[in-house]
Image (tube, rainbow, N blue to C red; front, top):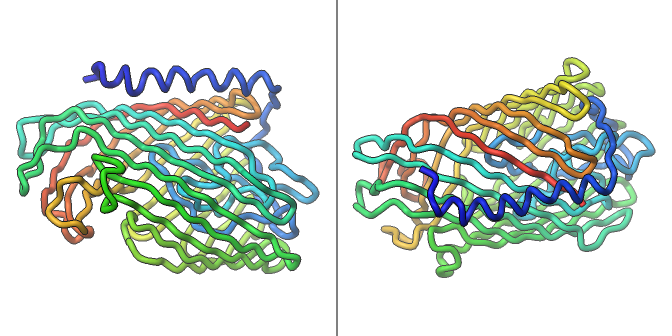
Length: 388
């Protein structure tokens, strides 16, 4: 049921953000062409960042190629790709060093009420997710950006957590602020890192025991004209694996229509025909994304995707300070994207969420404590992405 909470917490921010495309439109528009192919990654202009992507909820973006020889911007400005992912982690397929642009992304989802297993009640919620990145300093060999991400989930339920017999939270929040830096060396190596600090809880900023921290470093070594070795070390106190994770991968690009990131993280990008792109990615342990995108018209795309993802929070009242409140689900999503102008795009999407459950504990092995299974069902949403 959508009630007054939805109107005050969702409707007003959404109405304000819907005005942003008008500003983008007024700055001029360029008709997009077909999906661009991956271009060579050799040379200072064509280099890409080298840290694992952080996959987001909802219909995640398809990867964007780096610019072609002599270009300082991508062949087609693709509003699906973020220069820096939320929390300060650079995207593995981000823009060349020194070419960041300010960016804002807003998403809203509605999950209607579905039954809670073993309880005479339902659970439904509205989720909002806002992220932004702003370059504060950059030149031909350096860039430094500030990032932020805010996610809220407002629930409508009478469910209880079965073991501790406490009420299910009214809302959950994840707030992160971060910064990231990259440097392009004279030998075309790229090195950099990022840090993020935030909170994830039903009572955000309620205490130091709900603080989250993320750190990462990376190094990219070009190999030949199109390929590269990627080395990274990533840590997030609120990830599925809350300890440093080393990554080693080889970027292999045998043609303009195929690129593979072989290793950790694993990623494939393939364009079997002019208007169709396929991508797949995997990150430890249970994060999977697969998507097919088809260009119908110069400004219209349709897509379908599968995602397996998870979230975790520190409840203010929990059995142990080390316990987290986990949520896992799988989603099938289909949507349409309208490219409003060179600087903005608008998505409308819907899908089916299944295999969804909550539990409390230190890790996935504790998934039977305070476990609450929620019925499968549909969801709908929209996304607005603006670059300035």
